[in-house]
Image 1 (spheres, rainbow, N blue to C red):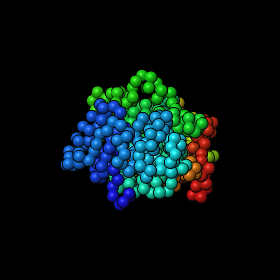
Image 2: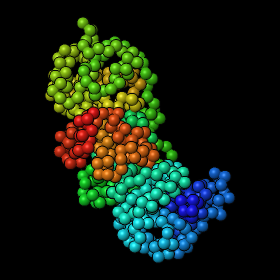
Image 3: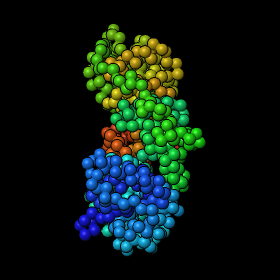
Image 4: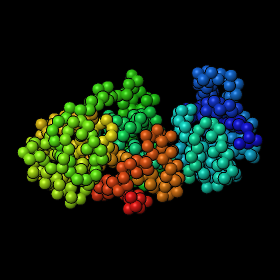
Length: 516
């Protein structure tokens, strides 16, 4: 830290991010200069800062912030954090002017979330003093700050910004200057795959959010989160990533977002996006959130050999069922689950159970890496075949998919069984990888690409995703929990079904799978 003291900080831009960053600095005890050319923005920022300082009983720190309209008034500061709109020309011009105004020792940081820090720094004669300092919205709440090393950034600048971030009470992670840095890059599949699932009619946006939140423990599903961030902001990040990577298919924007932009339905800030916000409700009925109580099951349930439904035995036993792999002599099991992975073994087991069991017993098959329509070619009794997501049994909702000829009585029987397991139910249309395996395995794959390309190491990537976007686990932690071989199998299944480069597995992920 400069002279071992908190530096005076200049914040360029008095919008939501700039005001939030200024509040963080004030909480830490810094002298803060907030610059904006628009008086109404400065007035609004001043009201915001005073309001939150008062809530924290720190109103005495109001004397520590200064609202200024000209960049020339930032001469007293030792660090400038730019939080202007995401336009390269605008940011470059700001830094050109700041270099002429500020002391030769002043450090310049940009809060850009998608633009190249190297490109911004190239507008100056002192690129060694320019780096990224990317806060997350809301800045006073979220603990992560990405410190971005541009091509010319000195180690001294990085060290200073890491120390400053810690002094502000935040957690720094150092990342390379690649499109999207860590968080915005690795998070792309969370939105992109959800949009594709919606666009393909696999599930409604409410269902997808419910599956992600209740099935995997995310605080907000992708559509609720897009509404909160702003669909325009999220779409802009996706478009920027796609353009900066010269059309990488994993970042291709989706027409649904473009349609929302044309409609002016940008999310919470416009009162409507994927959800309506007349009230402050979440757009989901309370009863949909309440899973049934566990218990009430009786009789035998058959479970095949295989590892694609970890924990299912314990769930069924806990609900009151007796578990076996073959039917009791003369008995009538309540259901049969085939949990083998994609191979001749899965086909053999499904066919054997279909031939061996009475025709009125529901037959479930895991569909993480098996297409239900393919499984239909293995059975004679199509009316009882049901696909399920076996990889995510810990959550409160179960994703089910009915075969093309599923009879209503088997649908009702399956719902009763999963209710005994304490699961809510989400029926979706057939899709490779269903919902959670598809989204989460793509997150794991993107994290593997980020590590392969030197953006950050795996532990840093996981930390960034937990702190920056509140993921319940880091993506590589998810990968280890699911098993890298299964992640790879899901991705290869997606690739074989779609034949799109979007679903190609990272070579590093293949190496991890071989070693696991």
